[in-house]
Image 1 (cartoon, rainbow, N blue to C red):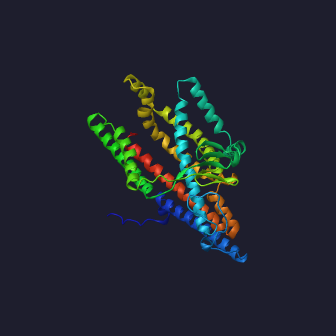
Image 2 (image 1 turned 90 degrees about the horizontal axis):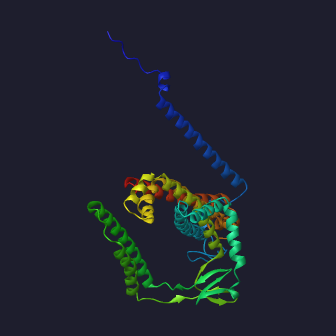
Image 3 (image 1 turned 90 degrees about the vertical axis):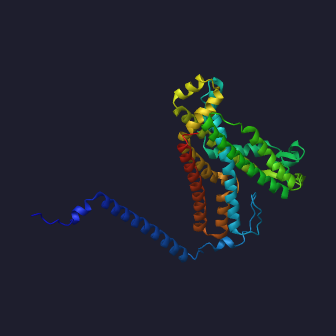
Length: 393
């Protein structure tokens, strides 16, 4: 006779590794939720006791203070919500330009460190070791002082060309008066970029099938120049410019690159590029030397070896640490408050001083930086997976 199966005892149930893991996760999650709940309730209680206003209602109130520069129209009569948006857009502006400049400059310097030219390699080494070992805040102070102290005041500004002025108030230059033709030209530019992308995809497909890559340079340049021009012409070919002019102690009209923006952009770009240069150098070194030898044996020039062989394969090594540097650049932009650039932190701090709602203000700053960072991280992770699937091509 076979013995009846015995039910699982409590001891044997707890001996299951998966069960213990699930229980541990539930306990940790419960403790975390309990801690957050305690902190939130304690904060709300303390705010009520001190009769400090809570909530986000202050965002719809009039700000009452000015901002030195803004991507979108702004006046002191606008709301606190709009002034925080102005700060966020200013942060994104310097982050976008900083990422582009740091990437290009870091790639050039990283490749230069591996140059066979002794002088070029040593200059690149001095650039990297010098910039990345000086605190970023000191570099921002240096660039800001250099711009504001070494340049003359607006009345003695350097006149580079008609309507182009350089002074300690910034760089002033003519800017087109935006009309319908410019909108159509911008649409044409976007269409041209999409067309160039599709031409490149088609050329890669033809090359994989036939071994020959169609020439996309001339069609690409034709689209890049022709489509925006056609849109501009269809919109009436507007040519009006807003030209800067000296009025009193400063310039009015035109576009401005302020000393604060220039110093912040220079500091962030140069500092981050020194780290990107080492990342690029390490990625190239990670490519087996046989790849370079094979390319040289086929008669490829040094520039083509780097562009067609080394950099595409190095991307799979470069992208993960490069993502971290992009995130660091965005977060380091919060140092803008030290030189007076009205970024997200600066405008939010002024809002907190005006309203007294520090908890909400700090939460908005944290949420904004978290959203931007997760967006960058998500895009770079997607791109990393994309080039991995394509074998680095």
